[in-house]
Amino acid sequence: MSVERPALAFEDQDLIPAVAQDVQSKQVLMLAYVTREALERTRETGLAHYYSRSRDELWQKGQSSGHVQHVEEVRVDCDGDALLYLVDQEGGACHTGYETCFYRTLDGDVVADRLFDPETVYE
Image (tube, rainbow, N blue to C red; front, top):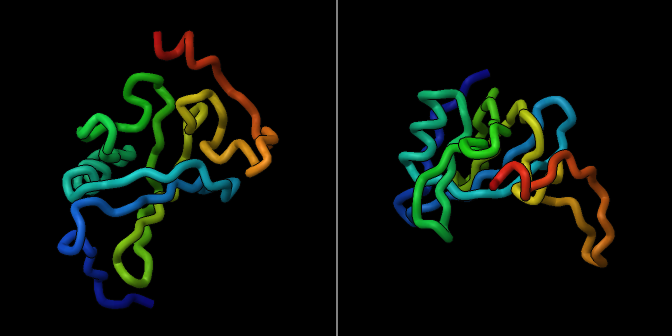
C-alpha cells in the first residue's frame, strides 16, 4: 500500500531529529539531527549524513572512524518532524567506542559492548 508522500517539517525548524536503528538487530544506535542538505546527501550516497549542532557543520557518519552507516531505508513519523534511519552499521555507532550511544542505564550501568578504543581511532 502506498500513501501520499509525507511533508517534512523543516519549515517549522531547520533541524529534524533522526534515530538510527540497526536494520538487523533492531537496536537503537544513536540520535542525531539532519538538515535538508544532510538528508539529500544521505539519499544520494546511501551513507548516513547528519548535522552537528556543536560543530555547526554537516558530517558523514564514520568519515573519520570508518564506522559508516549504510542506510537501507528512511522512514518518516506521522507528524513529519522526525526520521528513522534503518542502517547497516559498520563497527561501533558511538564515538566513545560502544556499539550504541545508549550504552548506559540511568544508574550508570554499562549495558553494551565497547567495540573500539576511541583514542586509537581518533588520533
